[in-house]
Image 1 (cartoon, rainbow, N blue to C red):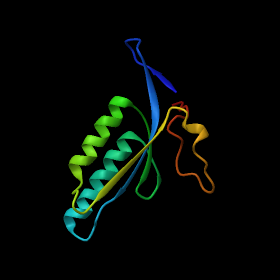
Image 2 (cartoon, helix red, strand yellow):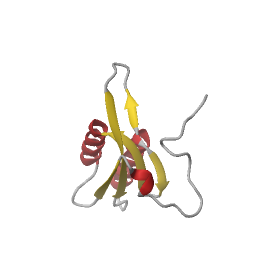
Image 3 (spheres, rainbow, N blue to C red):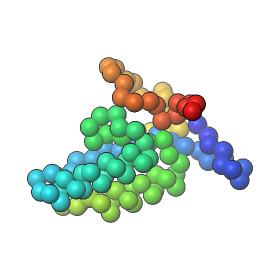
Image 4 (cartoon, rainbow, N blue to C red):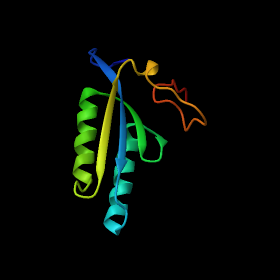
Length: 109
């Protein structure tokens, strides 16, 4: 998928799968969990608990990783990023109930 920005440059997008495990035994952990989820929603869609599909360009991927890294406690929490590239439709197989709409579906308001 290619996004055309208003200034005419083409930016290639990719599917970035974000997974996280945040220790919620403390109130601080519960707060971190909410903050991580909120940031992931800003970049993509939740497909399972603690799993987000984000269609982003390289700059957005770097930004999201940095934001999440600054939220978690690396001694108690973990993040995983799977870069599936821009040919991701051939790499994702889904079985069962779909949650939400695909990040690259066309929306008409």
